Image (tube, rainbow, N blue to C red):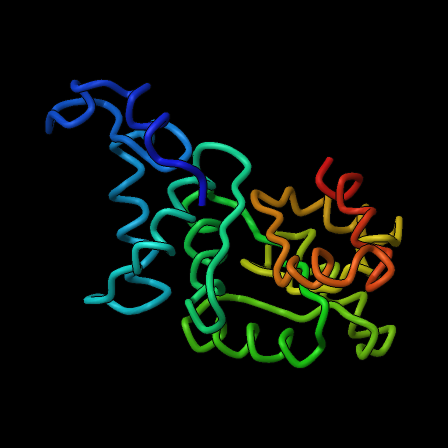
Length: 195
């Protein structure tokens, strides 16, 4: 996550008051009203008595304010971060991940949590691929998990744009940092996808 001290210093002492409209967040002030939205989304995704871990909560609150880089260890619940953030932002989420097995695992967890999620990758037959893109564009999905190569395709970008995604989450980005852009050159096209 980012350094917390500048964010807290910017919000000042008034933010800690219960009637303050904003509370300190890891990337800047967060509207107090959003905290209830976060709690409701957590209950939907993880269950009524569940809570986010510190790293997860910081990532969600950070993404509600601005672009956010969350570095969390394996099995820290990043899928919940994407799901909760997308629900709070009020639009569908596109998750970009490099491994097909991770796609299946993430979608299985999301579906188990009651979200409408689908995979969009090279394993899908043409007709199924078109169904997933149409569902996303029509607002029929909460989350679409895809690969970097899919986001390099203009037809996919157009179809995803039709769904007005609220969040673009890039998972396993450490692979690019570790192995360089040659690992998956299509990661370099994400700036276009973000727009």
